[in-house]
Image 1 (spheres, helix red, strand yellow):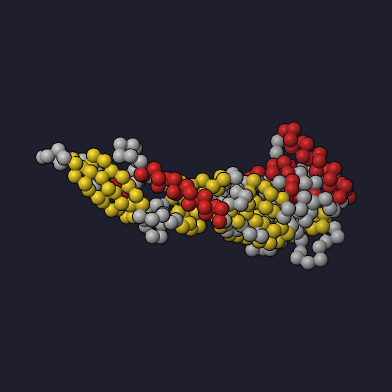
Image 2 (tube, rainbow, N blue to C red; image 1 turned 45 degrees about the vertical axis):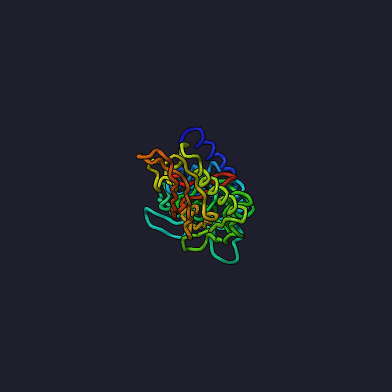
Length: 318
C-alpha cells in the first residue's frame, strides 16, 4: 500500500483496533512491521473493509482470486463486527506467527486464523484461507447467503481467498438451465487445503436448449444445392460431382448427449445420425439428368458453456 490509500487504511485500522481491543493497551504497531500488518488485516476483517483487505493481500490475489472478498461474504466471517484477540504463538528473530480469535474465544476448532509474518514486515504465506473450486456452468458463487459474480472458471478450476469462518459454498449458473445443488460446507480452520468440485448439470430446459441449437445447426445442411453449407455437413462428405440438383433428409432425429468437460460440457452423438441424399447428375454423353442417391453417417460434436444468464452452444464446422 502506498500514498493516500495507505494512509486511509492505516487510520481506519488504528481506530478499529483501539475500539475492539485488538492491540495491547488499545494502541497499534508501526504498519510497516509484521505485527502492524496483522493488526491492519484484523481491522479489515472486523470492519468488513473489502477494498482495504484486497489491498493487503494483493500479492496473494495475483495467484489466487480475491473475488470472494466481497462485503456480503465478509459480513458472514467469524471475525466480522466482533472483538478479536491477537496472540503471538511463537517464532524466532526473523519470523513470528499470530493466532486470531474472537474474544471470548470460540469453544471448538481452535483459533480462526493463523498468520505468519516477518518481524520486519510481510506475510510469509497466504494471509487468508483459500478454497479451490471447479465445476460446470458456473457464472457466480454462492457463499452463505451472498451471491458473487465471478469470472469464467478455467477447466482446471480456480483458488479463491475467503475470510475466516464457516460457509456453505455452491455454484450458480444461468437460472433454470443449470443446477448445482445445495453446496459444500467449508470450515476455514481445517488445515487441509480445500479442493471442491461443485459439479453442475443441465436441467431439462438446458438440455432442450442444447438440442434445439444442434437441430438449428444441422438444418443449415439441408439448404438448396447452390447455397453455402457448413464444412462438416454430410453434403460435403458425399458424392457431389456434377450434381444438378439434390435434397437431403435426416434418417431420424439427431439425438445428442452432453458430458461434463472442464468448466462446461461436451456435445456428442452416441448413435451417429444418417443423412440421405436424392438428386440428379448430368450425363456428359447424353446431357440427360440421371437420378442418384447417397447415404452418409456423420457425427455432431461441440461444446456448451455458461455465459451470463444463457448457455452458449458451439458446434464447430456447422
